[in-house]
Image 1: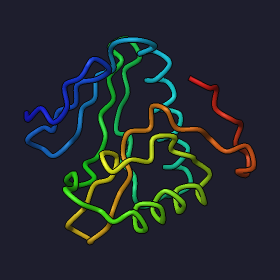
Image 2: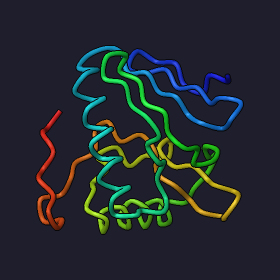
Image 3: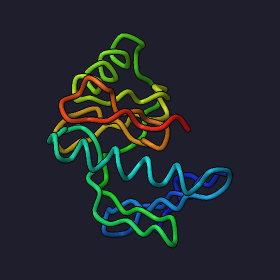
Length: 135
């Protein structure tokens, strides 16, 4: 496994099988874990094609396993970054941390993807969505 992120809030590893494992830690880890699971399930139900798929979650270990959405970017122009996060909102989710560090590039289909949904919000006007709690 390769560690791609190791901070006070989370450790993220990519396995040899390509799956991404994220373990939440630090302040409000339980809330951030629950929110990310909720948002990923919501986006999966809406068939959003540019976010990771939740494969498994473990609330005892505060661990999720997702599909891999490609590699992080070195550069992305501001206009394209804004378009990507605006597109996410059309699926009913505001990311709430729309920075380049949360964008990847999936070479298999040439698609920019969005990752890291622990602070994201389900928009209240999304069909059947309830607003997510503020973290």
